Image (cartoon, rainbow, N blue to C red; front, side, top):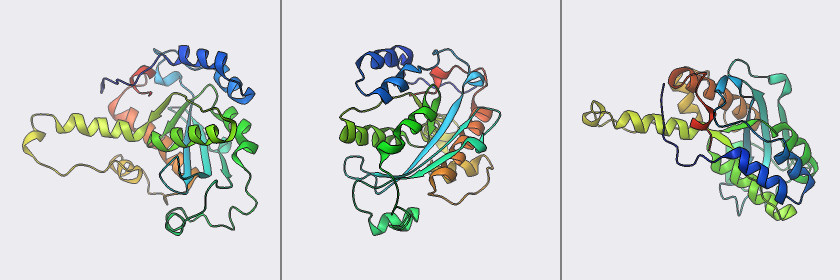
Length: 238
């Protein structure tokens, strides 16, 4: 079983209890009130939800969310029938270079709602579960900054970052005595490249729902190869 010393671990139960007391928005209050798991809860007992955003760019302070995809899952099953996807009206303008990447056009967003119209539904889907993403600075930072703009209150929640897991794995492997002499090029930890190492199928990238499913599958594989169903959640969440 892989063991990583994670300096970002918090007592998430206590943190969310404090947020319940301080949150002014009812939707956020209810989200925090759902709580989370005890630090020692084994991964086999966790209900996860994989989350992915497509955005107009990579800067959470300048760009905005235009698509959200999510799918609940456990170590045993991915619940595709309960998956959700939304298009959202952007807070900034679509740029040509971002359209080329995610393929979402102005016509796709013509009748899309504002984030506030689907916020309660989104938070209900995430509440009480452990969110799983591939690169946390997109989903957590964008949602936090967007809510600060719209309701003057941000959001914070525990999550697992499959990109960070992959980075930790390759860092540990590169520091082994054998690999010190091999001088291999560093592995890519992008979603598609990470999946390839576990022989997972190739999916078309940059669709929020497809990437959420891909992230769920990746975490299942990472746990199978490097951890154990008995691993405590505190070893993985951030």
